[in-house]
Length: 148
Image 1 (cartoon, rainbow, N blue to C red):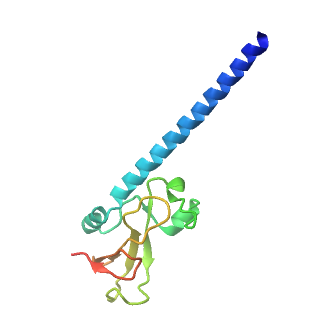
Image 2 (cartoon, helix red, strand yellow; image 1 turned 135 degrees about the horizontal axis):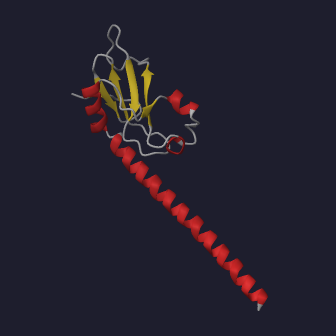
Image 3 (cartoon, rainbow, N blue to C red; image 1 turned 120 degrees about the horizontal axis):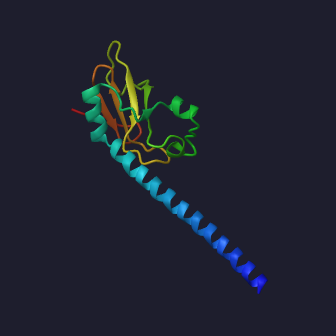
């Protein structure tokens, strides 16, 4: 009888532990989905372009590649949402080496991810200049469309 009770207690402890772990797994999956959906809204083309027009800078939820790497981001692993939840990559200088965007004296181009949903970065970028020009690329800098 004693052994039977001991066995039941051990099983109930294991069942409780397993249920607790599963609940944690499910809640982290739900939180990751919510974070991804929220970030997708925050980084939508319309949201980012409107913010750039009004404030002439990116929203605070953007971090440069250097800031992200310093926090532990690995582009190959696509772990930005784990390392910096609620953040997206943006603010780095865009060199415009191929000259596909209009050049002007003292114009500086910067880039930011748009339509970001966590994981690896997609191909969608907004490019914005120090003098207010804004372009979007949906194919990782192959074509640019000016945002009027």
